[in-house]
Image: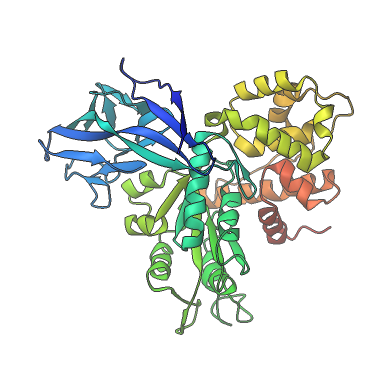
Length: 466
């Protein structure tokens, strides 16, 4: 089999970067990322003299036994740091540890690792030592996975993992910044699984009040609490045979975390107010934009639940780390939103793409889609997409003069006053948003940058008519 090799250069902390290669077969049936194997040599601390081979895409280090490298160092956090491999070689990331991660004496949040550099974690010092042998990390040969698009190395790695584990029925956690497409990926994993003809039920753990979320997940029986006028099925019952997607899982209350852990371990639930245990057959996919490792370190999220949820962990990269995907995404959004000929209405498409690639995209793929929709509201043709980048940031502030001044009472506890203020803002914002878009829910959801199902839940929550 013939392979072509494309050398990828690497920024690093040293003068000798670790070379990586992208290999693709001549018949386009196989593709992989070739990276030199590496080992970690512990030169001080509790495990001085030991060597460990980095043998995973993401290799975690910390004091907890759940890490790939567990070091019982009291100055190290439970999940202290991780070493991952990608197109640019090996990267170390601090996981919001208490005492920090140091590379060559400098405290870092993330850094590329050069051969021979020293890593310090608490009292432990480690030398990063690349070997002569190489690791081949498989990539997808496709530029899409259902509705997900990307030809960049990070996305093709995500697609390979999604293609591999979608049929396997394992529990999946998806992480990434807001707007990277976590719910879209979750639904595509469901659609590529044997459960595709069964329900896909979404629960937003951040959007449902603490008092109601247990009922939303597990259901309730009549009379179990005020307002429970009849028996009600929860998400796990409704999704029987299908998939439950727990969005913003990091917001799940500490009281519910052990109950969810029991669901994962025993595959059974009990409705609120009932003593009857029911077996369930569901797959669980969760997502968060939070650093759950930090929550685990601080004791705000159960460590055993974290590992149960992340049997397969897929981290969606932000758009600024996959800029070569922007032309592909722009063309897809143009066709989806405006039709096959929409690209002909864009001024100087090549120059526009160069400008869009330089933008930081804090809102990620969702922000890019919103930009294209906003630009087509203009009657001027051809459309200069780049001219709308500044307007996009102002878009959420339109009609601010029409919004009331929010007030709050200092006689209430801080948490209650804050919740009242948030609810007042949400209701007013939604009423104005729907009014401006003639009650079109799909259009309103796209402009607000939220999922349509979430918008519908908020409309029901506040009893908005029309």
